[in-house]
Image 1 (cartoon, rainbow, N blue to C red):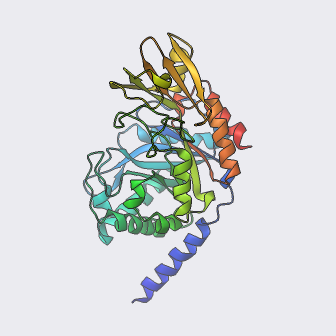
Image 2 (tube, rainbow, N blue to C red; image 1 turned 120 degrees about the vertical axis):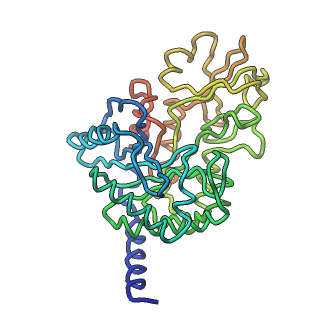
Image 3 (tube, rainbow, N blue to C red; image 1 turned 90 degrees about the horizontal axis):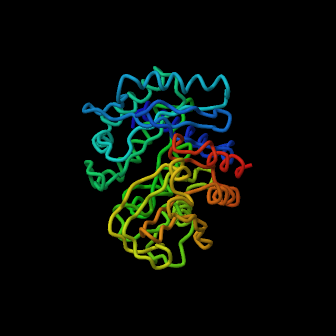
Length: 361
């Protein structure tokens, strides 16, 4: 064992202690802002962190920006600090069907290459940190490469990144529940992270056999025992020994629609003929909520709204200001680290963001 290895291990251990006790946990309001369209008008004073989505991993295992317009987007985001000097801008790498993580994490050399490329991007664009959205280690559900070794390699990758990023830069990940824990070492890797963005949404989608509350805090009265909920996801994270202040609860600024739904219980937890579409909340307000035959309903047990059209047998599950306010109270009650949402442009006049900000006070 060399002296340099011992020193490096000590440095990583010290950094892990520094990130294990976040002081601003309850105040985190983390917005994902996408790079495939012009950034929306952003209320900088209402946010603490922005995750710019997404950078990708190239064939050489390096983090790269996806198109020439990204530097201009990042410049716009950095300029928001003139309004809110405390605002932090992170580069999010990955997303659904994003390839390259398994290879980048596969060896000590590839991990170092990737980590160094991330640091270079952060320095070049004067950013505050990086968010890794690997969907998912050890799984190929998004048709990406995976290895059984991803489980240990993901932890090693985060360890290397913490060593390269030091105390100067933030390091976060987006996590899921259930099988995500089977293919990761959540009980070990969290020490390298400033916090974890828990993707507590998309519980019901085109891959699930029934409708349901895709971002439900709790289960409906008609739920199957295996149905997912935000509360169950949080409890699974806590059971892994992750400090509550490191868990940032994810909420959805969009809904998911199902067509040809069985009419029992106004479509809640029922079989359907086809997945219809994802709808931004702004579109739901403009075209669907109490319009065109859709009636807004409330599931008191799940603490979730939904839309039901009895004529067309269409069902839409979503988050709204009422459900988000309840989730903010849940965050405060359980001393979690704040709220994250996907994504800012889908809001309607700031109604959902205002529910977060007001609810966390």
